[in-house]
Length: 138
Image (cartoon, rainbow, N blue to C red; front, side, top):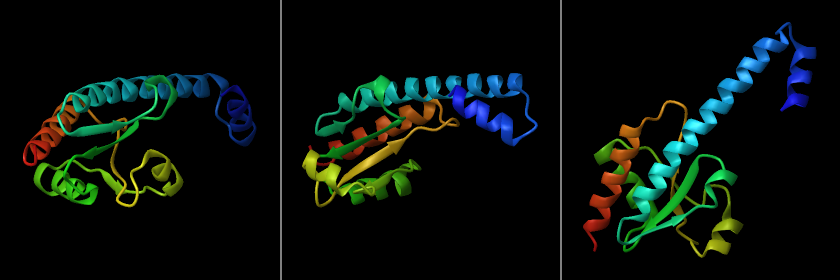
């Protein structure tokens, strides 16, 4: 991160203290996103019929993927979006080799991405929505 700050200082009139504040802000955002991701992962792991695909929490960005038993991921994503207002990405997400490794080809997964504007309420809605969808085919 310090190397990036040095390059940015050379390219702009931004002061080192401003860039340091920006780095602290980005660190806080990442911490908050991973906290919400942990809540999402815990909630989704507790739903019967849901498989979570995610690495160790401290070693990834704020995304995770799931499959729901008996459902095509594209159908789950559409229902989440249209019926519950929960945006996701579905399919192979430009990573077909990873999906081959995970055994999720050809349909892929449903991917959730946490951003700086997500809240605990968004997470609760997502978990509740996936639980309702999974219960339809349990």
